[in-house]
Amino acid sequence: MNNPDHHAGQAVPVITIDGPSGSGKGTISQTLAEHLGWHHLDSGALYRLLAYAALQDSLDLNDEVALLALVGRLSESYQLPTRENPVIRLDGADVSDALRTERCADAASKTAALPAVRKALLAWQRHYRQPPGLVADGRDMGTVVFPDAELKLFLTARPGIRAERRYKQLKDKGMETDLVVLVKEVEARDARDSARKASPLKPAADALIIDNSDLNAADTLRQVLQAVHAIM
Ligand code: DC
Image 1 (cartoon, protein in one colour):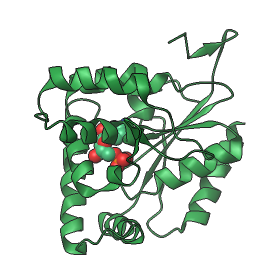
Image 2: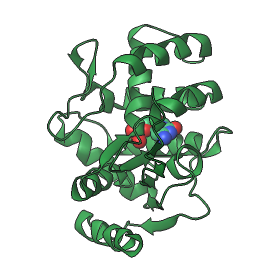
Image 3: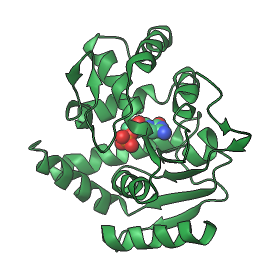
């Protein structure tokens, strides 16, 4: 990997969008990246890919040594999905939908709590900071991975609303789930992601917090664009 943060002596601009699951950060960051013509890093997909590959290999999700070896293998072969080619592949197979299951999200939340795993993913994530710019979404993009970002946003919404959004997303993909179970799973994952010692889910001190519980996607995007245009 060459020195990805700086090109011709200038830092490549980054906008970070963090938040819990169901906050809409994925859709908003993808749309924003397209709008700006920048790259988009879905850091959750890296955590999910690692967890999925670990489950496939029947690894113990606490086995840091085995997980680190897996990060090394995946980071060599993983291609960031683009609008033209949105497919996420593992050993040639399309795993885009498999990564979205609750089983995979749950495993990702567990492996993501390991400090060594988070550390190993740092360089991999920073590698995506390429010209003309990067929109990065996740849990710790503004606090840990890109602390010097131009703009830091934190999207959130009430837990019940986020669970309902997840329910709809999964249903649209043909994955049937029970809303009551989903609310419990979302709350458990939030608690684990927020309580862990290593880079917990929390807004950066200089982040703009947007609660979109009562906003639709278009209104959320409008608020985000206002913030972006204020700095560019
Ligand atoms: O955003 P997501 O639902 O795809 O993320 C899946 C899991 O990965 C989530 O439970 C927490 C973890 N994650 C993380 O710890 N840090 C990130 N930057 C992104 C995701």
